[in-house]
Image (cartoon, rainbow, N blue to C red):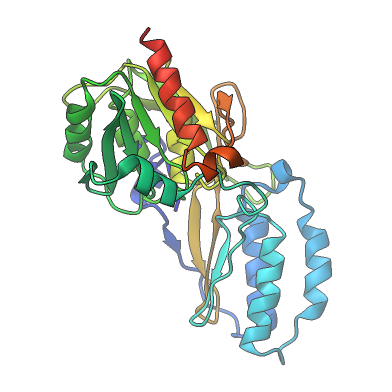
Length: 338
């Protein structure tokens, strides 16, 4: 699911939820060829990242179009369409039928996991954690720790306030979003607003504005400002890995704008475009991004946000039941307080 809708200033996107369904007029015959043509041409006009990824969509058409005919079974058509979509190497591009869903996992599958839920649960959380909504929190050696594995549940402002209150007196906070593949778009802003020292420019959003691959709107600024009962402006560390994606990727981008925050771990998985849903003539749905996000200095975050400090899980630590990245974050906070 996408991110960044709550802080956008462009009026038309405020009408949509995280993924808005845009129905295509079904004025053509429901044939395999017409469905393929509709799929290809809709992305051709609206997909955000052809130029950024240096993808020749016309060449991809010339490869896949000869394989499409009206005698293909639904399974065969689905597989060929999925293969074509996978050429985009985008976790926000999916095709949905009543029998399958296409996915592209290249944004994390070739990379080290840098996270073990078993080590976290057994050796750090134990029985001493508190759960507030979908957040797990505890205190490790006077350092506050929060784990959020998903933004798929709506986050209430009051829940984040409760978390900040519980950890306010600690030496610092580690906010762990490794393996968080995103969810509701406003969650990252709600959380980040509790760590904001002042109103800060966190990103710009560009919207697909025309049929050309380079047709985009003027960049629209996105801001995060302090909200809630109180802000935690002490030392904060955000933990990331390649499975940090979409709305979670945006959260890392927001937090990176604050001087009290350090990002540790691996480059995030990316997913910097807001996906929108469409429907084919046969009722299958597909989605893809129609926006892109850049940092204030112009860096496109589609392929991920790099950490301030690169740390990978060491095999020797894993054997001993230690989380290298989490331990590095705790040590950073403790050294900051000396």
